[in-house]
Image 1 (tube, one colour):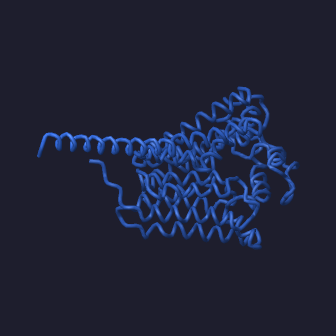
Image 2: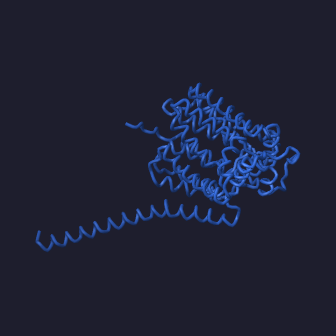
Length: 386
């Protein structure tokens, strides 16, 4: 080979290396745009746009409840002010006005520090805490692929939860803590108890503790939930306790047909409320009945995943942001990016908290739930850390 040929080949090699480097740089830039820039733009646009359109709408109820506690008032409406039946004419603002604070006493006490602050400042702090809760939850669940974080923050359940200022990001963090510390009896019992107190529909977590033979933790969780509830209501002088069941019943009757629940689907299909709730009970029970079929090495993950799904199936009220909770089992099954991570992005087809009782919209949500459950249950066993 002549010297000229060697120089020529060397130049071609440099061109090849240069082209490879450009391709790699373009691929990385594309990933950064898709998984960092685009989610950031989506979240900024949705939340930024809400400043002139009921910023932190749901959080306003939390803040109002905390403010009532600070001012020495009961956060609960009087029983006589509650609607007797389904008030379809009530819009979201009307629902907030009529039902005021439909959360248990521990939530009112927890919101008291926020009630000391002006609303915008309190909501902004809560928003930052919610962002941190989602990020920390993914870390605790062992998600090692940064792209998964971008997909989660780009999904409408997350964006909606952040925009409205809901409890859901904190509930997701609670689920992550439950799993991370599942072998520590007192910790897992305390967190499960707090989750059930915050959102009663998460009671199937007790089933998870029982079927995984964590009997002492289940008992402690139940005791802690009851103790926290009674203790918190005692601080409020038991104001609103007697009327609270009626408050929940009236709220469910008013809004259960507007969301993404199996009850809403049944009502949309023309079933009576009682029959629709029976269907929800059957579907939720069916999800729990699958747990004994789990392979031994995946029993804990299957049980955890199915109780989260069952909680959503059994709840008469389900809003779009509730589906954020399914990220917990998804993260456990797939710590790196996989096609299953993109399933929640399908909610952008109808990115609103209410479905208006449209069957196809509710079906979309339940199909996403089923697809996520199937993906989790068919995931390969996660390797144990060495």
